[in-house]
Length: 134
Image (cartoon, rainbow, N blue to C red; front, side, top):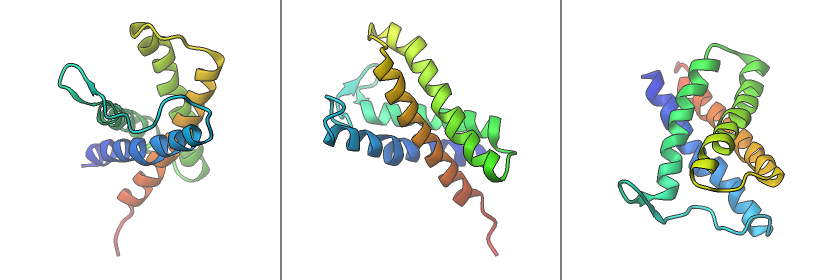
């Protein structure tokens, strides 16, 4: 059940934290594309934001596997740091070249900020989903 909670945490953190900060960047004129991209993506034709959230859910499982046993400041900082570095490195070093996109200093910094905030979101959701009742 904890792995499902980790997936849900990553999925929701993508939609709320990642895309929320991306929306602020867009409104500030810092990025040229709008958040919550509904363009269908192959192979199933689902909206890009849903695909992104699915992979955010998978990353949520990775974060829980690596950091689930931590507590206190280590738990929170671990999620922010690993959340920032892991997905950003994979995006810039694997996904961007596969899609023939350029990885610049700006995309690295933006990715670290977005994914660090996403990692904080995962930690928040996991904290509340794992709390013992009573």
